[in-house]
Amino acid sequence: MTLDSSISKDEQLRALADGLPGVYKLIERITGSPVNSDFRDFISVTKPELKQYLSDHPELAGKHVQSSEDVAGAHDVPVLIAEGGKWIVCWMDHGERTNEKTYGNLAEAAANYLMAYWQ
Image 1 (cartoon, rainbow, N blue to C red):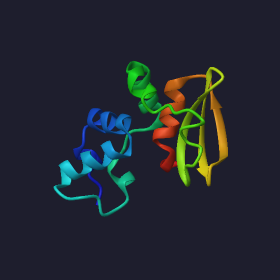
Image 2 (cartoon, one colour):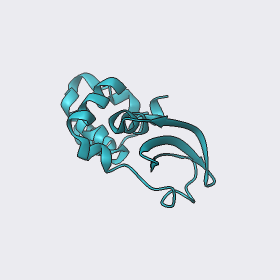
Image 3 (tube, rainbow, N blue to C red):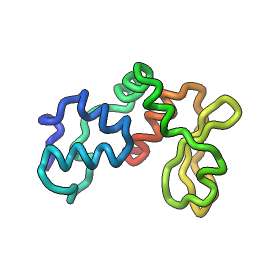
Image 4 (cartoon, helix red, strand yellow):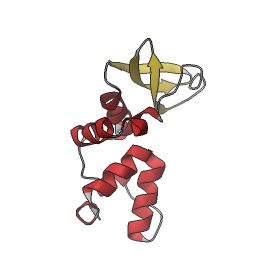
């Protein structure tokens, strides 16, 4: 069951900008129960739309940035790292970076990080 048409794009963008906990809270509020299916079924906004939203609200993008030290022991999660004036989105595998992609734009990096499970 998808409810994306009943969830406004603005609500979806605000939830995505908060990270997966925000998405889960939105879905639970709309459905009245915890998510028991693929959360992506409830979201219809695109990465370009999220990038624009984060460009308009840079403080929301910045709250997801971590340092290499912060994610050193992370496993099987996407991360957004600030490094050398650029932003890196990658998956962590037992503390090792995989599938790194570097961005010069924080909003673009954050949109890719926040929608990593859509790839």
